[in-house]
Length: 370
Image (tube, rainbow, N blue to C red; front, side, top):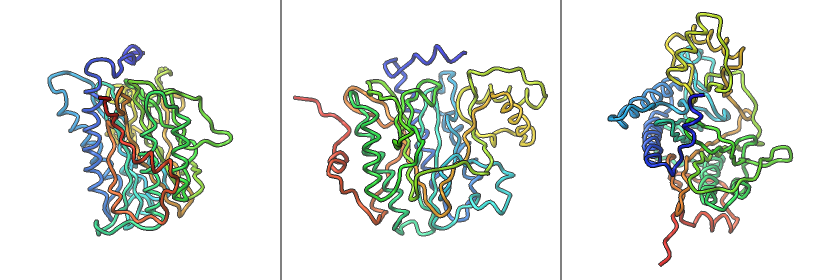
């Protein structure tokens, strides 16, 4: 496989941190612009399309003197209220007026998820906002609880991701922070280490540990990069697949098969050219009908891994925040992910655990000893 040798490049390799940081600037810029589009009455498909195109156009401005592979690492997904993630609809899906998640409404809890890469070095980010006509109006009640819980859990987790600490400590901190807001971390969510052209490395952080969901203990090391992924629910914290169409996929790089149909071969050829190793949305292919046929054949032969649209129970709210961070000797660098202005939220609950409070007051940057 053509990407195997490239995975050996790490943050210790000259120029790699610069590429991560450049990809992170693009991811954050696009995330900010997408947030501006999240207003009552907006079509989700229009926002997703806008964001995907903006990722491409902003990446085109980076490393113009070098011919580097650049593109989305994860397509823009806009998931509303109880929908937990991966909703990135096709134009035909959005035309169905019965689809309650296709048009943003006043008061919707809206999660935005996206990613960019430069030369295979990935920056992922996610953010949650409430759509409202009055931007100055505070977010209150359970919506505020679930959003602040996820953001503060991310901030607390971030301070544990450092050399010598362990992933199990991070999971414990996430759980304690979220419990303060009488919410639940969503089960089955993993934060992965990322490497060149690899969005889901083997070293992981569990969002919530349960009796039957545990992961191997891992001690963080200098020059590792992690995408810290926090999902929180006002409900039980258990999601299931919806009947909404799966549109987000990634090539199964370990699989090979000679497709038989014209549509299948044409789709797979375009896929290998545009999205050879990272995630994409089928919306970004020109002919929707041919694309559906191509995807169908690829799925039959296990050439694609899908990201199904997940949901909590009706009436619950799910929030999502994601930072990509680089573990350096003296600090953990935030490569992508936006801050949340907590002044705009009035949750019903607050953090009571003194250890979590102290952790949140701890600066990420280590001061040199004099």
